[in-house]
Length: 118
Image (cartoon, rainbow, N blue to C red):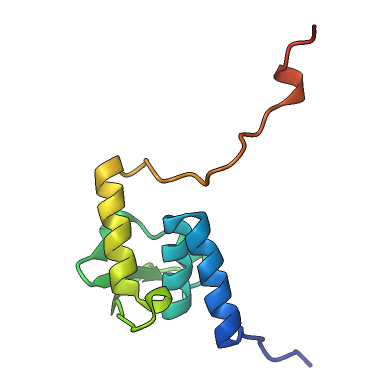
């Protein structure tokens, strides 16, 4: 007998979204969209800029690539407001280019093999 699916409580969900927002705007938007639209991981990773048209999300579902168009949803809680999050992300991408996503701040990884020895 299989176990029923486990879902996050509202406070757990908000904490996950908060952490994603602190890390990177792209991560936050993708997590929010994935949650709000019930996307599979494969559907979420295949979202492209062209799939976010106006206030709608275009999703390709299933093996036959069936396309669905779903409205983005606003919310009084900024962590759950897809419309504002997506518009902010698209505006940020527009100023930096499609590949210029923000990287988290912090130390750069260094390889011990690339460091010179005295």
